[in-house]
Image 1 (tube, rainbow, N blue to C red):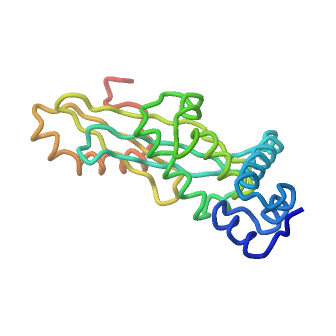
Image 2: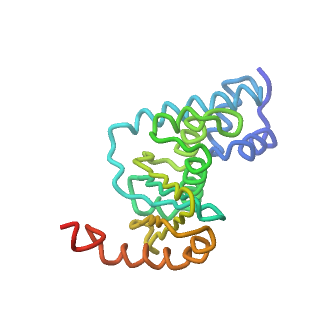
Length: 205
């Protein structure tokens, strides 16, 4: 059996961000083979995720991605078990990456999202690896993408607590008006987040 050195453990931790003891165990189980150890850790992460399946994830954050042209935007909700983890830098990055990937791929369901390509595998594999590192049950609960269409504009707002978010889209007379309207739409979204309206006008009652 190959000797597992501290340097090998450090290299594996750097590559995977897994805990030191898990890295050492992976290298021991895989006879010092770095690539096999990475696979071992990934498989273990999936097993840990399965064990968390029955736990409740009711905390979390919203992630927002708006196109530079304000032609489309995506709003994503990712849930964690505790508010403590929702403040974790790794979790915050996961939410941001999930929102960006939803925006880029244009998927409409979580199932579709999980099957999309991401980095060297699927988004599901990436997400599972992050769950293993963070150590709680984490789920992508829901998301929506709005496309403004011709002469349209869309913008959004997420409140500072990360738990309330709004997307607003508008149709305009021309592209120049749509471009100028973007800042105002963010203010409208902010106002909607604060007031929680249920209709656009009194005629909708």
